Length: 464
Length: 85
Image 1 (cartoon, rainbow over the protein chains, first blue to last red):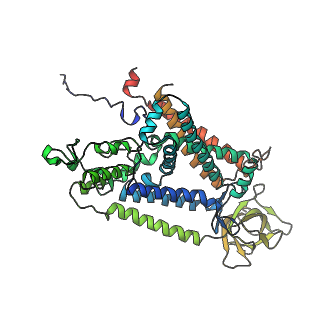
Image 2 (cartoon, rainbow over the protein chains, first blue to last red; image 1 turned 135 degrees about the horizontal axis):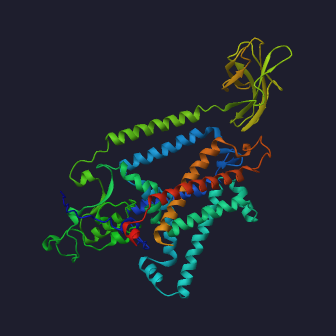
C-alpha cells in the first residue's frame, strides 16, 4: 500500500541574507537620534584617540607593554599572572551586552560599536567630498572625468590619512605613543610597529569604507545571537503598521481617512536613510542595527504632514499589542543582578590584589640530596613577582615541615618595582624525614608586613 | 572563483582569526615566549617576545583556519540551486 503525500516542498530562497551585494547609499538624516549618535561618535572616538596621550605618574596612563609583559592602567600595573581579571572583565562586558540587549535591543550596534562609529565618520568624509546621496549615486554612475577623479581622490586622501592615524593610535596603546610619534617623525619605526600600524589602518579603511553593513550582516557574531536576548518587552524599532497602512501618497491637505489611507505616505525616506539598506516597514529584520535613522527621517516627514510623530518609533512588541511594557522582569532581573555582583566582585578583586606573588618550580635534575650531616635537601627555583610600584625586601621561609630550613644565597631578596626576581632556594629537613610532604613557601615583605604571599610545593625525601 | 567559495573563504579566514586571537591571548598569558625551548638544545630559538607572539598568532590562525575550512568543506554550504548546477 502506498500513501501519496501531496506536499509542496518549498525550496529555501536563494536570495535573502546571502544575496548579491548592492552598494548602499545612506541618505543624510537629521534628528534627535542622529544627534545622540553624533555625540556618541565624538565621545568614543575622542576617548580612543586621546587616551594614549594622557600621562599618569610620569608615564603613559594606559599602556599595554607586551614586550615587557606589563599592563599599565592609570595607577595600576597588571602582569600576565592577573589574567583572570581580564577574563572577568570580558565576562562583565558580555553580560552588560546581554543586559542592555534585553532591555533596549541593539543599542550597542546603533550607537557604540566601533564598526558603526568609524563607518559614521567615513560616511561624513564621503559626504564632504562626494556630496549627498543623489550626488554620490550620480557620481558613481557617471563617466570618469576630472571632477569625479578629484572628488574620489579627495575622499581617498581623507580616508587613508584617517586610517593611518587610527593605526598609529592603536599601536600607541602598545608602544609609548610619544616614542612612537618621534620614531614616525624620522620614519624609524620597528618592523612590528609598521606592520600593526598598517594592518589596523587597513582594517579600519576596509571595514568602515567598503565593508560597512556587510560586517554586521556576515561577520558579526553578536548580530546572529542577539535575538536570543529579545522578548516581548525589549525595545525595538518598529513601524506601526496598524496606523500606517494602507500606505500611499496624498496631497498634504487631504484627510487620509477620506481616501482610505493610513499615515504612511510611502515617501521611502526611511529606506533611503537606512545604513543597511532595509525597509523597516517589512517588520524587524536581522540586518537592522537599531540606529534609529528611520525614526528621525519619518518624524521629520510626519511633522511636515502635520501628523503626530512616531509612525516609526522605539517600542516593544508588548506595547504594539496594546499591553503594558515591563522593564522589571525575570530576564532583566537575573542579568542585572549577575552584572552588579560581577562588577562589585571585580573591584574587590582589584583592590585586594596581592602585590607580591610567589611561584615555585622544583629542580628537575634531582629529587633530593643527602647532605654530609645526613639532612635531606630539595632545591627549588622561586620566582618572586613584585607588582608594586616600589621595590620590596622580601624574606622567604618554609611552613608545613617540622624543623625544616629554607636557605638562599642572600638572606633578604630585593625585588625591584614591577619586576620578577628568580632565586634558588634550598630546603633542608632532618635526616629522619620520610616520603613526599606538602609544604608551603611563604614570602614576607620586611618593609611592609601586609605583603605576604604563599605558594604550595612538594618536598621529597627517601621513602624508607 | 564563484561567489559561494569566496564567501566560504571569507568566513573561514574571519572565524579562525577570532579564534586565533583568543587562543594567542590565553596561551601567552600563561606562557612567556622567551621560556619556550629555554632548557633544550639548541636553546632560545625565539629571539624576542614580539616575534614569539607573532609566530604564535599565525600558528594558531593557520591551525584554526584548517579546522574551519575542513568544517566548511564537510557541511557543504551550497544552496540546492548551486548544487544542481
